Length: 327
Image (cartoon, rainbow, N blue to C red; front, top):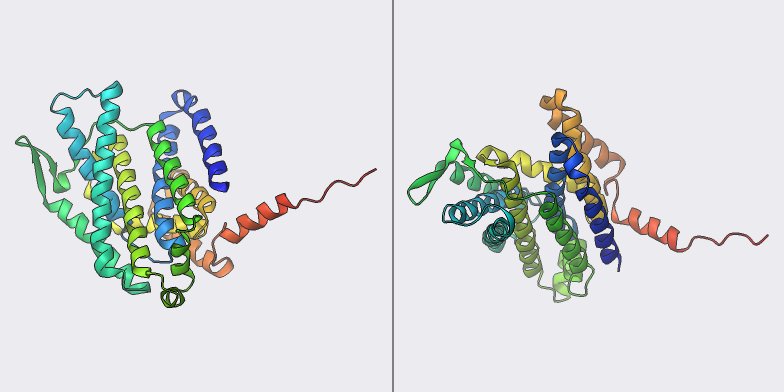
């Protein structure tokens, strides 16, 4: 019920903002769309780090797979007569996103099966290594479509703009709805059991490796789709867009918002998308600011600014609001 209400509110906000996008300054319009991409990234990582209790530092690698594969698919289709406007562009974008997300999910499966028996810092190091492997491979591989080179490693990749405000926030809404319904379902309790006590969950017969792999596959799929949306909005891809610093940015969103809190993660994604833009004059100190925020947060509120218990408390107070005295 709560997830359906959240989706309804999100839909109303998206529809309202869609009417204002044409009148907005392009700078702020771009910031809003990038916030939508980051919401999808943060919510998908929250399934892995927040709800399942793992610690992945490779989300930018999944994003890179989706970005490049979807860009290759759309470039191939557009070069073979598909219309770049209207319904044709929508179909090209959808197919590109599905291919990119599917290959990212396969990447999540390839990482998950051999590494998810690892825990804590060992898992973080393994996923960080995967992130760097993907980036280096992309940087050194030259893909050709019909004899024409489109991906030249460090030279980058020019992509036709196909994604817009509606497509970005539609995907974000789907990601939020799916993750919320999954973790609040009877089946989804397995993810929470892995997070709360993996040893006890194993003792009760829960296949913890299966749930961790599933979390990685689902999270990687949406990271790949978010990468596809990013590539088709940004018009240009570079391997430097997907360094481990991008993974850290997404992790910061999850930790700052509160691991396991969907609402908190959404708010953190929006805030941390806008913050560097307002602090552009101090861009070289961004990581220092992020580090200080994390240190202060870990000392003052280890559960995040809007951890799950904060949301439950607010909902409980609203539900049990005392009646007004009779006069």
